[in-house]
Image (tube, rainbow, N blue to C red):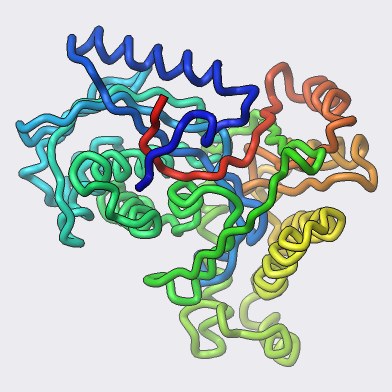
Length: 412
C-alpha cells in the first residue's frame, strides 16, 4: 500500500519544514471548504540523469524522483465533481460524468484532471469526486517536470480514494502520459511521469513503450558526500518548440533510412557503414544526433552499473560523457536560431571551473534554455553556489535530494 510517513519520504533535516508545509496546506483547505479531516498526498518532480533525448526513439533513460514535490489536502465527495484549487491559480472544476476530450480545455490543468480520470475508466479502474487544495515547490521551466508531478498527483489521489492503492506506479505513469498526450495536447514521452510515479533512481527501457521495463537502483546520494544541484540559468523557453521538435524528427528520418520508425535497433556500425549516404540525404546534424542516440542508449547501462556497484567515479565519468555528447552531437545546449543567448554553455563552463576533475555536470532535460544538472561534492557546494549566483542571480541553485518514493499518500 502506497502510504508513507514524512520521515520515509523526506531527508531527516527536512521533516519539520515539510510538516509545517502540510499543516499550511490543511489550513488553506479548511479556509476554502470548512471541512476536516483530510487525506494527504504527494508526487515528486523528477530529474533526468542519463538518456538525454532517447525516450522518444524507444531508448533507455536514467531518472530520479527528487525532494521537490506537489502536495495535496483532499476529501472525497459523492457529487461526481473533481475540484482542485492550486495555490496561485484559479479553481479547476471537472465533471467526471463527461470524460470525452474537450478541445477548449487543451493546454489547461483541467484537461490533465479529466484525462487522468478518463484513463482510469479506460483501464477499468474506479473514479469519484474529490476536493483538493494543492501547493508545489516544483519549479515551472526548471526541467523538473511540474506537469508530470501534477498528473501523477491526480492519479495517486484517485488510486488512494477509490482503488485502495491497487493501481501500480507504472500504470499511473502511463495514464498520466495518456492525459498529457490526448487531453492536454502535448506529445511527451513517458520518462517524466514514470520517474515521478516510481521515485528513487530508476532506469527505464522503452524498447516497447506499452510495456516499459523499469529497474530501481538502490543508491544513497546523500551518504556519498555529494549534492545534486539544478542551476536555473533564467533562459526563456519561448519560441523553442521547433528546436525541440527537430530532434526526434531528425532521428526518425535516419531510422526510416533503415526501414524503422525509431532509432532503437539501429546500431552504431550501421550508421558508420552508411555514413556517406546518410550525410548526403539528411545532413551532418541528423547523423550526429543519431550517433548520440546509440551511444547514450548504451551509456545509461554503464551509469546504472556504476551506481549499483557504488562506483561514484565511474558514474560521474559517464554523466560527463553524456553532457559532452549532448553539447557536441545532440546539440541541444543552445538554440541555433538564437546563438547570442547561451546561458547553458556558460553554466557548464563555470561548473567545470569550480569542480575540475570532481563531481559531474551536464545539460538537464530538453535543453536549449533553462537548467543544467551538477553533482557537487559537499566541500565545494558553497563555492559552486556563489559562482553560479554571480552569473545568474540569487537563488538560481536548487540543492535536491533523491527521494525513495514516487506518488504516495502521506501520513504525518
